[in-house]
Image 1 (cartoon, rainbow, N blue to C red):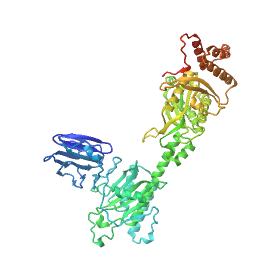
Image 2: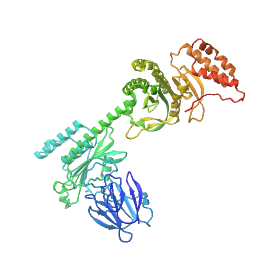
Image 3: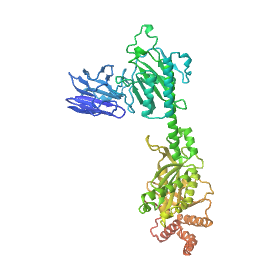
Amino acid sequence: MFKIQIKNTTQDASFEHSEGKLFGGRAPSGEGNALIIKDPAVSRTHFCIEAGQGINFLLSNISSGNTIVFEDGKSLAPGSTAEFATPNHFVIGGTSIFIQSGNQGNPSDFFSREKKASTVFYSLNKPEIQKSPPVPEINFEFPSNSRFLDNQSNAINLENQSAPAVIGKILKALENINKLQAELSVGEPYNNQIAKQLVEMADLDIGMVLLLTNDKWVISGCYTANENVSVRYSTTLVKNVVEQKKTFFQDLSNLEEKGQSLVNLEAAVISPILDVHDNIIGALYGARSKNIIAKGGITSLEAQLVQMLASTVGAGIVRERATKSKAQFEQFFSSELAQELDRNPNLLAGREQEITAMFSDLRGFTALSNILKPAEICMLLQDIMEHLSEQIQIEGGVIVDYAGDGILAMWNAPVEQPDHVERACKAALAMHHGFPDVCKRWTHLLGDFPIGLGIGINTGIALVGNTGSKRKFKYGPMGLTVNLASRLEASTKLLGLPLVISAASKAKLPANFPTRRLGQAMFPGVSLPVEIFECKDSSATSEWKENKILYETALQHFEAKSFGHAIKTLTPLIEKHGQGKLMDNPSLKLIRKALEGLESTSGEFSSILWSMTK
């Protein structure tokens, strides 16, 4: 029995094989067991393992052109079969495979050792774009006469290039670079063009566009001069270029004079791709091996052309990232904030931060959706959301998400805003203020159908950062602060009020900002009662201010168990109600609770006025 461990960027698994043949690959076929390897660089049926003499195993390389390489540097060519001792370790594509007999322990122990193969190859039949897993490291034996160009290398001087063929080569290369600059795109097809141009302008056997993604090098474009060239690169050289931030090349022109053979030598040219901050974001990598006897190493001229091509690639990436980030930021942030984030993207890093969160939701919109046509609903909702979003961004808020007819927004992140609570409340009040005007534009659809707007606001510590994914960006908050804001928005239905805020938000508002204390409330998922407040703008009427004083005074009596005084305090409101003026829900609720207190004989009392159920 053999124990087998497979490890790559998407797999880390152990298998046992007892008898017969074991076929391995992306989609292995054959008369025996199958071992599926999730690696795009592995052939469909790549190898076959079966028992050999004693604890040895027979390994057959079934692939048509991909060499299997072992830890000790041995290799197994395509179409070959050989016997190997256990334990042993070999690599195909970006996958490491460790095999041992059943009595030799756990194969996973191998991967915990600080051990690295001295020579590992990554080979493909044909050039293939690989995003993941990255190419394993290979350590070439390179000659000592390696050279570097500065980032701002001297301009190419055509007067010193007297041979017509050389001048023609330079002009053709410059013409092709200009065409690529005109397109200045990104992505695999464009990077394949770059790799092809790299091979042709410097007479190379292979060219690659390497991008640095999450601290890993990934082949984003590749071209080979013929099918017999293996797709591989030296991470040692790439690392050297990263440290130097200079174009690396190897001039082998004087090796023959020293009596050194060019057979089996490789020459490489690597030019860093830099962003606007002079940070390494990728590299152009080219190598010459098959034609090195005829053409020699890489010349300074060829290296300069590669350097120019690398600048073109860098410009395309920087422009694409700038355009993408600007469009992405302005979708959620105000233009001023988007510019700040473009200058300092580190502000988007995840961290704990005090924020003010706002939830808004349309009232009656679900019922309306059952009446109107889908196209009408979409147009109406778009107009409403445009108005609400505009008010949020006017006050510097971040629109985190749209969910149906609701909005989640926040303040004080990613940049700090000392008046974040006041901004949030002003935005909410402006949303309400302009809401009737939006509805008037749609009276031909709404008729007398009532729709409203409820908003909840809470302030507290939250974890803020990218709450989406690498594929879809969504900057926003997470935690109890956000959950409570959502509960406050839901409470506006029961309270019959347009805007409700928490005590934490109230505490950070200016003292002259009109608010009314509504009492204590219990919310699902929140263990302690929360003090809640109604919020009004500076245009609050004198009648509202008078009613606010009566209500808050009655609330104090109620909480002190002076139920009679609470009811008596609210008598003017009751009288107004009798004269045809409506009492608001909080006042009616307070009167009912005070009456219950008067009628109660149990002596039990809770000062919590509101109990919000799910």
